[in-house]
Length: 224
Ligand SMILES: Nc1ncnc2c1ncn2[C@@H]1O[C@H](COP(=O)(O)OP(=O)(O)OP(=O)(O)O)[C@@H](O)[C@H]1O
Ligand SMILES: [Mg+2]
Image (cartoon, rainbow, N blue to C red; front, top):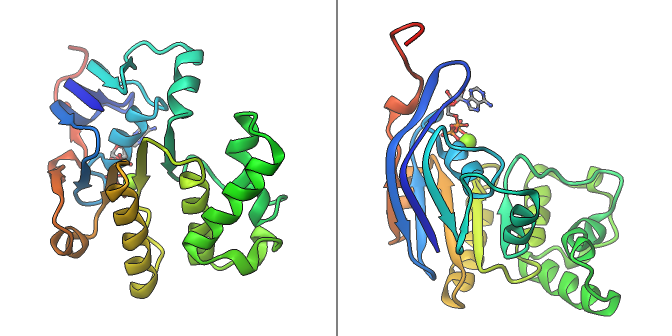
């Protein structure tokens, strides 16, 4: 599902976040990307959904080479993905249902199909009672439940989840992990970025460690 060959990422600020990273993730795997704040977890995920280009190396996701992506290819790739990321905020002028329906509308699904999928996704995260509510009326944890419902509403082949449980309490975190486990059992490939080492210890999935060294390995030499 995912191949990364010798990926490096240096931001214009000359901070090298990822350095010569090799990574293969098979279809159907559940993988944690773990490391402290600033280690490059979000950068890695943003490369995988085409929001960021690596400075060097090759990335292939679901058969699409992302290194020099055209807009159409990114668009096609994202149709098969569920993305949980601070890059994709909820639309505050739409209610809960409308937010979850949004990716289906973009893909041109029929209204009755959208309705069924949206109520299924909201039931899955436990928000069916809130479907008509404004986003502004939700707690941070409930907003995150909407984000998760939106990511899984169209049964993605690949779920890229950046700190999906970051704002959730213990009970909600357990419920969310249960949802991800079900998805995994149904065959979804999951890449789950977290700083929460206790989560990584509790769930027996492969872990890709990003080191604290990623916290700004600033290049020493100027102008080289
Ligand atoms: N657009 C950017 N421009 C410049 N530097 C950036 C940019 N995005 C991230 N960085 C830097 O790259 C490093 C890694 O950031 P990243 O967001 O990938 O880390 P992270 O592991 O997701 O951290 P956190 O756990 O806090 O979310 C940080 O030092 C950050 O300041
Ligand atoms: Mg991050």
